[in-house]
Length: 204
Image (cartoon, rainbow, N blue to C red; front, side, top):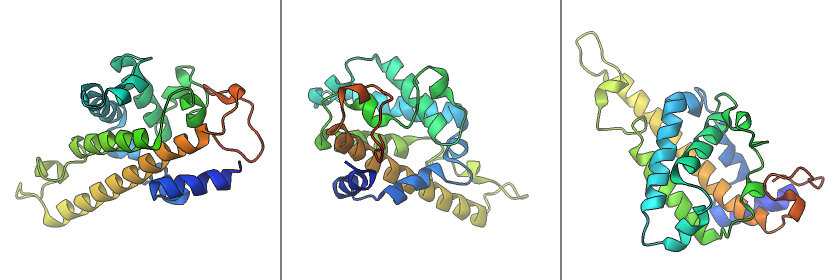
């Protein structure tokens, strides 16, 4: 299947286009900077996997992650996020290969569109709780004027940046989660777990 057809099917499943999903990787300042670099990315992964491993109502979903401990899952994901969103190549340094090969690394797992939706829900909850993406709990972090009060303009500018960041993240994660499901249906054995033999015109 061509790259364009995979992208079309991912759009149909997610409601997000490929072009819209890329915004999270092109933000200025980068998402890596906006979320607090390595520590902020690790916080996002920790918040996410806390939800996954505490989701006792959906044992079928947790079983997808059975091959890793929570600590291992957090470490792998946070390294991927750092490298994807503008930071150093921590994912490659761990020997994970090309960080773009998401579908190949997930094709051995029983991931459905239902699972993708639940994955996105847990990630959106993690995004909403992240300390650098909150808008009300600590207004002083948005800057103060010389009278030691929060500048309304500075506060509003930062609120706008936070909303832009969250919107870009939601689009990236929703599209990518469903793209993995679509692409995994067309994986060959040599393309599983980050294999290197890719048909021309395909993007995994």
